[in-house]
Length: 151
Length: 152
Image (cartoon, rainbow over the protein chains, first blue to last red):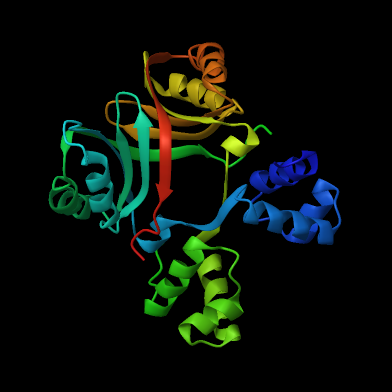
């Protein structure tokens, strides 16, 4: 279990994920050696699951981002597994979440433009298995996107 | 402005997407490039803004945040002023990590962290339902999440 010092490190790291280790050690009030040991341990124990690179897809020419929400035909016992396996094969899918609620699943999908979106939607999304219902939310703008937790 | 990465740039992005802690030496070895050549490409991708930063994925449950909820919110009244009021108020809520303005069945989608369902109910009643202009609210409790590398 992470102790108070680990939490202090994580609070600073989540507030500024691009921070250099020396600055992080200073802000969290630990020595660089101690910081390194604690980060290693949190990675080993899975408190820190991964450090991913955030890619700005717009800079790579992907102007369209859509949040697709699905309800599945739950009479089929393997509906979730087969849907998720098929969604993983679509390269433009960047996130897959499952839910308890009126929505079963959500995909984040990116496309170069509306023509590309239309093609993706027809060829890769409408062909996903076991879909009972779906709706789309088209991203206009991101107002807030932080990784901080009120630790 | 969009940049035109070549196949080597995309291979570097693929390796960095899944682990941002990989250094230029390790990536270079994997792709048959020298460390300085790899470093120059990473710097160019960072300067162009393609590499936007890091995302630290933590075990939220182990840190006492067992519940993640996605909210869809429709505003009851719309107009430029009400959007600004709503956005100012919603971004100030510490438990709200993500706010996106969207087109469709809802006007905004939110990602919220709570300690447990009771904590979520408190946030929903005291913070969300009291937001200026808030209308219909739909909540879905997240069970699992997977981030994919995307079309690299």
